[in-house]
Image (cartoon, rainbow, N blue to C red; front, side, top):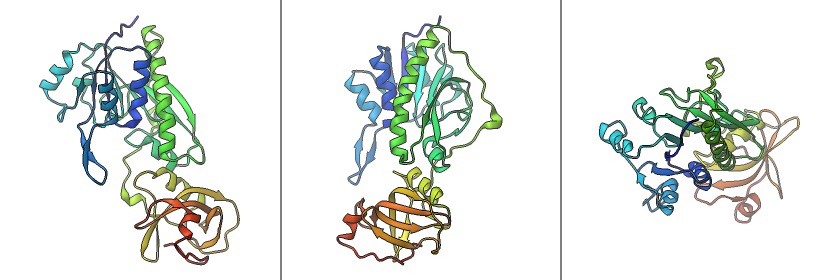
Length: 313
């Protein structure tokens, strides 16, 4: 039977908060929390604490925010907490083996995909971009590779046609917290045997780049819908209209034989803009025009003129 009396949690963004909250609600003894340093955010560039830090401090848990994690001094500091296990969820840094193996039970991770699919920094976004209909969470034993450690406990989750990276991440974060609590109980009972990943089935999920944001209207409506939803909230897919960028949101694929050139605005109705693509049409229900806020199409049209026949480039 595994003794898990003291846990150190490592995580930084909002995605990691439900995992920490689930452990605390379950009565786990989280003796310290590690997250990245406070950073400036927003238009005012005001320095703000990471979401995980805010939760930890509200519960009186010590918070560590090292700028360097590959030092003996930092390892010595972690050792003073005498943790049995480290738990990681979206910490945001690659951890060295000396750190992963520091506690007796090693380090487990809450990863946002069904491994070995989508190893890397952006598994939630890449699943949507690829048009996947199912994703999930994997509780895994961490090693020094990029999400290559043994699988401990997977859990699947459907991807809705309306899901963006934001909405899907919220659902996956909640699942991650539930799965982790279950995994800890199974680990205590020695009922969590590790399963080696099949490397031949592995796919990568590298970080997103701004170069992925421009829309190619010659692609299918389904591909463009995945692009819009997968790149929301960053870097946000965009097209061009009269020399300015326009960002479409809340897309819906409309099946039909396309006669117009890809990128042509075919019609405007109360639902939004219907645009021709390389295959099928795309209904866009919200847009953001350069210099404006995101808004429903009908609200945008109250102050702007947009006629069918224009071509988005």
